[in-house]
Every structure is written in C-alpha cells, then in structure tokens.
Length: 191
Image (tube, rainbow, N blue to C red; front, side, top):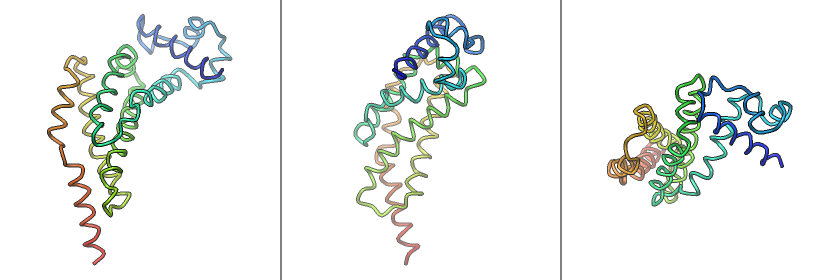
C-alpha cells in the first residue's frame, strides 16, 4: 500500500511539473492533486526534495534493467538517457532549481552502479584492489555524467545513441586495460 501511495504522489508531482516549475510547487499542491492529506505526504516523505530523490532512485532500477555488463553498458547508459527524456519536465525543473545536486547525485549513483558492474565483470580474472576498481568506475562515472549534464544543459537536443556510439569507440577495451595496469602495479609493489 505504501508503494502505491508513493507512486501516486510521484505521479502528481510529475503532472504539476508540466504546469509550473519545481520551486513553485508546494506540498499542498501535490496532496490536492493526489487526493490525500498532508499527513499522508509527510508519512512517506520529509519534503518535496525527498520525493524528487525517491522518484529518481526508484526509477533508476527500472531504467538500468540489469544492463551492467561490458556487453550491455551501452544499453544501460541509453536507458538512463531515455529515462531523462521521458521525465524531461522533472529533470529540467530539478536541473534549474536549488535541488540540482539531487539530479547530479542520482546520475552519479546510477552511472556508478552501472560501471561497477562492468568493472567487476572485467576484473574477475585479475588481481585488482577494490579501491582501484572504485577509482576506475569513478573516473568513467565523472566523464559519463559530465556528458549527460552538458546534454541536459543544451536542451537534450542531440541523439543519445550518437553520444553512446562515440563513447563506445573512445573507451573500447580501455576499462580492461586500466584494470590490468592496476593489477600489474599492485603486483609490482608486492615484489
């Protein structure tokens, strides 16, 4: 029952965002649109930004749909782009509001999760420290999210598939090579 209520509140927020910016939406607006009382809202969320964060993180799982391998990372990243496009009003409003850090945190978290799946898969037969794997995933996370934030800033006009195709050419084999270098570096320090 709680998930249904949360989803209904999220749907109301998204509907309202098609009419006005995030900073002009109040909890009263959301509960009136949803047909529940304020107490119900505050039972589930601390404030509107908590609801925004819940929307991003809940829907991230669906957006990725298990696309966390070397062979499927492009599909996973495309799903993130498609999610952003489907939720254009929400993303643009959050991007241009005080809660932009929530959007960035969402993108960093979902991208890191995708990339750690790839890094873990690519390092199964290598002796690579966990901190080095995290460093590789972080490096690519910042590059990917930087490209996506720039795309959002420019109005989401470019075809996401072209960006992913260009990324694929750029990093083909590089994650594995980086992990191999860390594996070698680690072994050299042990000697």
